[in-house]
Amino acid sequence: MPEIPTAKFIGPSEMEKWFVATAWFSLLALFCAGYVSFMGLHLWTLQSWSFITAAVASLLFATSLSIGSFSYYIQWPNVRHGYQKQIGILAFLVACFYTVSLPILYPETYWYGLGENLFTADVIFGGLAMLIFGSMVVGSSRLVASHIKQETVKFILGLGYVGYAFLVIRAILIDWGLWETWFLTLHGFPPGRLILSVIAVGVLSLRVSIPVHRLLVNQNSQG
Image (cartoon, rainbow, N blue to C red; front, side, top):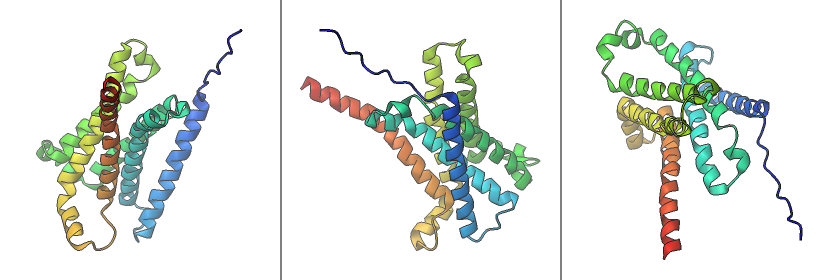
């Protein structure tokens, strides 16, 4: 009896990947801009757009890093083989805009005062996160990835979770006083960095759950 050929999965094209990534970026940007406007802030100011780009970058990183975790559980090949890289690149580019806005808005901390604040948690954890994300973009590019081992590329990409954790630590150390006040009063909307940090913790927890799930599956199969 002849063997019935199985359908071979064909991943999305590069154009489709960038289209989806750009569409998701545009949707997040509109949502964050609407949130800023709803909060009564002037939309067309550098400070507002600095906040918007920080939020959009964080949500894009959350999307890119969580795609692999969701793919593990739902086994959706279209998710596993596409979109993650393009969304991650957009996240890094948006984060770069946010980084450039900081010395313009707060030169006493990030420009002429950078020397005095160089070893603060804000600069250290933010700088390490950007260094990791930048390494991911460079390491996954075709020009560089073709000259290094695949295991090295995977290791570099895996550091993205460490960089994302650094952003959570940075947010906690910067805004903990503000968060504590909100938790005690529950007045108004929660601080923006608190919302983004909760999402980030969810993304990191989802990733940690994968090796735990594999361990439980192996124990059940052996038992």
